Length: 184
Image 1 (tube, rainbow, N blue to C red):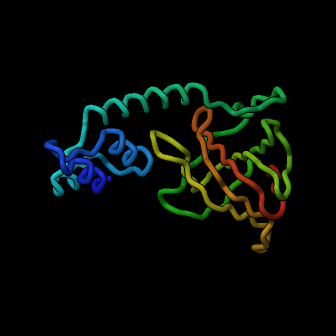
Image 2 (cartoon, helix red, strand yellow):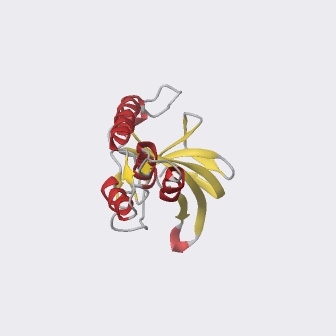
């Protein structure tokens, strides 16, 4: 992006400037602090359009607030799953592994007791190392390996997204690539 700003300024009488939108993409999508972006840009003789950065930040705040107000567990069968599920304990700052209890499963917004291979699923764990999308940071993705007694693999779930729902419940969304999972 900095190279593009330099190229765009060549042959003009304007100083090279990184657009506020580009600076915001670095911040919002990749978690790169604007202060560091500014330092790196200044070292290369490039300014940042902070007015447009602030406009993009305000747009994101409004979108985030609207999303926060509307993200709810999409349960279609009348059950209020969120009332029965405790908040998820986030462990990701300290570990990438944990033993967890499957508190709930959803397929197409319908609560189910178990889900098998090749199914898209939303599931709720009592604890997780997967970070949920929050404050401009995208949710984690990866693989969840579910084990049975004696370390036998029971299922593998490819986690594609993690969202926070009502309160502090993490909804992990993915596809079961092997085996079956069930509510504990």
